[in-house]
Image 1: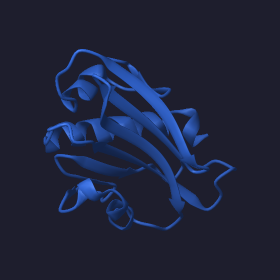
Image 2: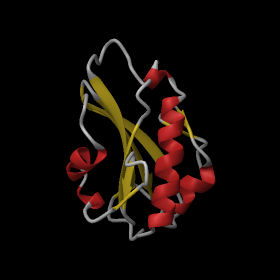
Image 3: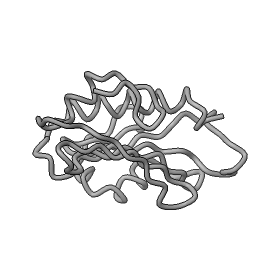
Length: 143
């Protein structure tokens, strides 16, 4: 298990809990547009988990961003309304102090999505999502 996902440190046990079994694990970074970085995890060459950092217009809520990630449908909202998650996906909003000059008037969101892996574990997704969001907040992505 990697201790870093595309440059973001994360507890390997939290990653493992969101993955199916298999023999070989690999990762790849994608940058589909100027405001998104996606870290894809593959088990035995099959895409099973995707973690994204995406900039959205300032003032959006987690509930407004979540529909972009279909696995969060009918998810559970955290008490502070920063996170929404299901057994297959989750979205988290970084703290307001997460600001960078190249994305003015935008907020950074983190998404965790399983990809046809058979994993359906809300507890594992919530733990990985909150830990990954906190790690992103402490990284260069927020400075």
